[in-house]
Image (tube, rainbow, N blue to C red):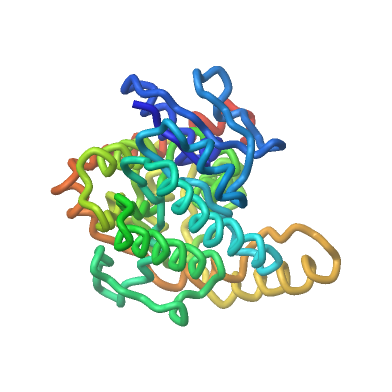
Length: 328
């Protein structure tokens, strides 16, 4: 089978490409002309240059592929990226859905996010049935993922065979950017995390997320969404795992959310806006950390057979990759 993959140079996308190739499938990857191709170096992948803006060109590029994996997204919490976030994540998704329909792709796997599900009420787990609204979502990135998922659902109602996957917080190798969670790991490795905040997240090995995409293609029900997650952990527990892996001490003290909120406001609203400096802390990301983002992935485990590999090993692989690639 030949698969068309967007976002193939990124964290989840490059792990998906490796899993598809390991299964014996052919991969055609959409890459930007000036994109960073390091994550695909040495892989037998057909590269096609372009973006998500032209439906006609996309239809030609998708032609001959049995399945489309739409992993690409502009992942940013910076206010300055607002226009690009919606153009790529919403309009780009609509264009690719239309192109897949024109090219008669047999199935379309849309990579959404638990961000589109929203933060569950305190003391509960988010599920595929959890519903949110645009007003409840605190960043343009989350709003864009919500709108993109709505477009995928509408395409399914209109006759395209679409399955939606909602990854939680993947960790592991090839986190090239890195993601916010990868940045936490790096800060720990670089001794730049003297304290922590009380928050929680759902971690999963990125290899399991990649496998979950393939399982969704093979077993998922049309129009359904599946949370690709595993263990719900506090940030403190995650840092203690990293301490056990590396031998470095975990931070002992928690700080109130008001402190990082103040730093983020100054960083993004003052330094970035008026002095053009790249902010180190996002105001929206600190806002989100005030609530535990815990989710239930039992539906994907039950219906798809989603693997649940040990999180300790996933964190270890992330540490090893960062060290081997000069990030630390």
